[in-house]
Structure formats: structure tokens, C-alpha cells
Length: 367
Image 1 (cartoon, rainbow, N blue to C red):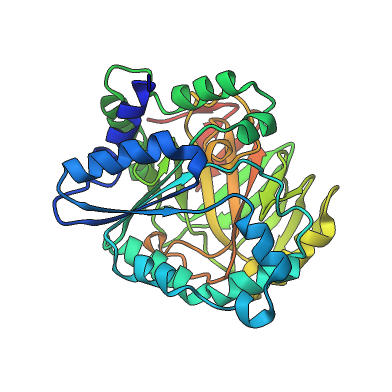
Image 2: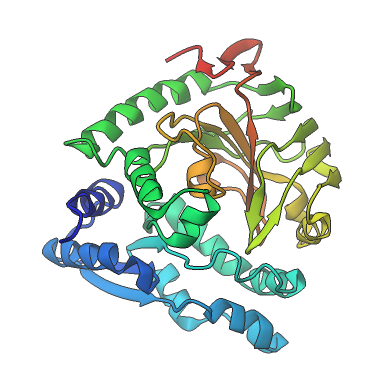
């Protein structure tokens, strides 16, 4: 028998996150490992009178691509991907990898070349999403690979995923509406502010937010969710940060990352593990050395680090920065082929905005 929580999960994604309506063209993206959720979504989308289209990728295909493809194939942009991004109404993506390290030995230069070729499509995706023309949500289906990364059994990880999304509640949508109200109060308080100063054992960083908009991530794009974020001013960031959690990008784990900023640009970057990969990513393009996002985690139901950015950037008591592309709806203008989130613990420390304390030592001081 299927887990009844799958029905709740699918309803949250279809009705709350993307508000699927009759006539919508809906792309459902994932791997065979996520078949139980994908099929539940497929049925519910049909029941809403919309047009579901399954985009199922096979494990191992990406590794073959990066090892075998010639340059003209690396830079080829699939017309099917273009059709979805340019014309579909809804995109529901279900992360469901069965080997999270399949790309760990792939030449990062080849990954960077493929990413750069998709820069225009990435921009279209962000612009359509900002205008509300493409409603999207990303979630993660528990697999053995994710459980191993998180150092849990599969059953433990499944329970973790459901708890993080409040899917054990009788009415998860109502619970997310409560979280949305709390985050809306934070966003309202931040309106019209100019400077953010993050201070603690692992950071002394000043960022500019004048004229920028904080967005409340309350389960409508990432699920589970729980953060507020903006695109900081591109030339203002000053100071240093030591990221306390490993960062994964393209199948590579980079640990012990420390960045120094001057005039909004990374001028020094070190890492304890895979430093060469970090430097290679920073050279992807000019925008890769500037910030596209400042995020503050608000989901205290996520209680442990999992080596998965979908959960880890939402951890209550953390902040994260993204190198590369900004989300246009925040007012951010940085453009890049990459968007790489890096997370820092702030259980000890504070976030001060224009001289007023927003957050200190694991607690929000307003809201």
C-alpha cells in the first residue's frame, strides 16, 4: 500500500505550491526512483483538468554525457528543454538521485561549459518565474543515496522528509499558511532597510539591500521550505565568511570554504577540500564572483544537516549566500551561469539591520 502521506504531499505541490488549474501545461520531472510520487502527481494534475507531461531521466545519463559528449554536444541546448521553459505553465521537479556522487570525477570545465551554454535559458526561466508565467516547485523524494549522504537509514530519512514538510499534520497546507504569515512579518520589517551586518564566529560581513526586495519562501517554490531571501547589492558586500557546512555542486563536495569580499566581489577564496574546483567555478564568468542571494533559514523542523541544499539552506539558525545568478524578483541584477548556495551556522551570532537586531543566537527578535 502507498504511504497516505504521498497524497498530502502531492496536494500541497499541486494545489498550494503551483495552484494547477484546468488547461495548464504541467511538466513533471524526476527519475524512476520517485515513481510513487510522480504517479500520484500525474493523477492529481489530470484530476484538476490540466495536461501533465512526464520528463523522466535515467540514472547514469548525466555521467555518460559529461564523459562522452564533444564540445558541440556540451553546448547544445535541447529544444525539449527550451519548449518547457519557454511555454509551459507549471514545472514540478522531484529530485530523486540514486547516486549523488556520480559526477564527482567529471572534469569541472566540461560542466562549466555546458552551464554557460544554458545561460540564456536560465535567464528565461528566472524572468518567466518572476512574472508569474512559470509556476514551479522543487521537492525531494527519499532515496538510499540521500539517506546515506545524511547518515541515516532510509526509514529515518523518509520520516525526516515528511517531518520537515509538516506532512504528518492533519492539514499541512494550514501549517504552511501559518509559516507564511510569520515570514511575511519578517519581510515587512525588512522593507526600506539599507545594510545588513552579519557577525559571529564564522562571519563578519556587511551587505547592501537598499532598493532590494526580500522574498518569503513558504513552500510555494521549494518543498520543504522555510527561508527569506533577497539579491544583495552587487558592489557593496565587504568582509569575510567561513562556511561551516560542506557545499555540493555538480556532484562535487567542497568543504571548509572561506571567502573574502571587497566591493561586492570575491577577492580571495580558499577551501580545505576541492579548492581547485571552487576556483574553477568562480571563473565560470564575471558574475560568478558576486552574490546573487542572501538567505536566512526559518524552518526549525529541519533539525540536522543532510548534505542536501534543499533542506540545509532552510535550517533555522543559519544563513546562506549564493554565488552567481540573482533572482530578478528580488531586484538583484547579477547574471551568471551558476547559482551556488553555501551555508553558514549562526547559532552563535547575530544579524543586525540598520543598527537593529533581527536575529540573535538562534532566535528571531521580531515577528
